[in-house]
Length: 406
Image 1 (cartoon, one colour):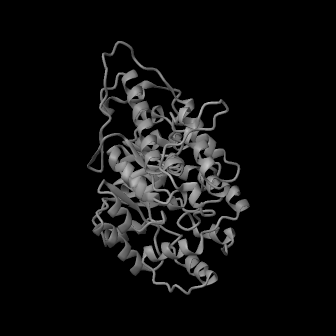
Image 2 (image 1 turned 90 degrees about the horizontal axis):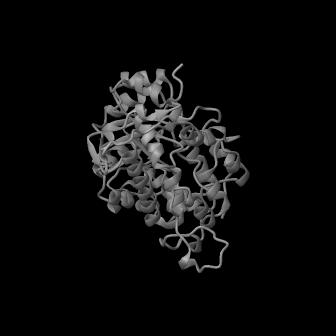
């Protein structure tokens, strides 16, 4: 299969620089739970399956070609921000009260008026169908079964209608904006017609990851052709790879401004969510633009190395917003205690990206369901240990070593 240069994709942002080599059928043919590598003599059926979210890292490594696994797992340049996203949660301690009389916890909450069974949602992740044949369809089903929201990337490589048909659970749609305003308008209308309940605009576009450049990532011709057609472009079967690449490079609106929210409000009544805010100034502007929700995020450390950990900016943004927009957080969440810390600092819920991709590639829908189950169990344990009967009881009084505010 011909492959286009990854350097061409660097200019296209996260909406286009997606995936590495396609997996063989043997690499993704089963949804059965996987087991980590084990050096003992037990039969595979006797070996323990995953018991924590990070177990899926090694399981996905076993299933995927190296370029695909590194696309999921690596970060920008020296990967300082990638590591700090996780480490920052570890720096925050917990100091729970005792003798609080709490023996069970209610994890349910609401996000944009939608009740969900726990404050953990699936983040929009590009290229999911490259990691498992069911891709976003499996993620949407797992989210529905877990009673939570699935945010779907417009670059997941399944169409709006395919994802909508797969699950009747609550879904958001992350839009990468086409340059063609007619295509963009039609895309938004299709999102509405398919029953998605909100639109996410990721504003920290693009990625620069050394591993992807070394691996010369590219999107297979047939996959890219389907993707562009799914967005709404009309392209012939006979189009050459060279012409398809050129079309793709020109297809996306990469330099956006705050005006995008005015334009969207002119064509849809769906709630609008801005994803990628870290500074107080941007938080104030988001409130001024009357966005419905803000995701505090550094794109999982994939965009620009040296950015602060998302959790380190959570409290600053929360105090700036002061309840005028709902707040969410992504990047670095690996444990239920991480979820509790994010909520204690002002988030209403969190979104998980890499854990979704790892668990999907390891075991399809069942893997994603297991992953969400681990977050549920760990968060419930943390809430009971901290005397929180419901998520409303979670507060910063439970935390030690919170990020400084000055």
